Length: 169
Image 1 (cartoon, rainbow, N blue to C red):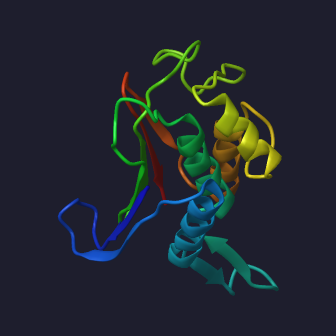
Image 2: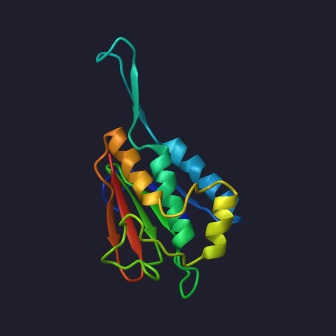
Image 3: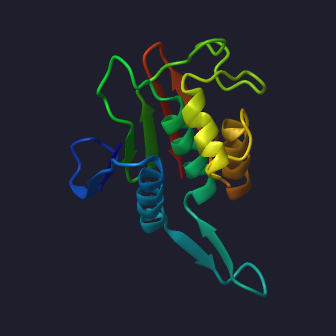
């Protein structure tokens, strides 16, 4: 997995942080979670109520759902392309080198109840270790968390060989 944080909305913006993340699944997830936590900004509003209100620019749990989906559903055959998490000034892009699989197609991608597993052993290991809660609800959970936080809906761009998800502030 590659993590890249740039200081602007374009690919050629100055790099603020980068990391190549590999190793055991638990180590990859922990290191990515650390990067996500480190880059989330939280605004504090002290004027709209009797007590302050805090709001992150991105809900951590939504980003975790989307990134863990990329790990679980990635194609590990026929490509050496990494999962890429690119954090721009106005959005986060998660690129998964593994397009829709099995009963999941470009046309029905992201629909509730439409699930298939390219990597069933990895999916079971992630569930057993507590990284995913239930199969088939990651996208719905991320959508709900983004909505509750006031973010626009995530944009999904599934293609035959990759899935790109874009999350905006």
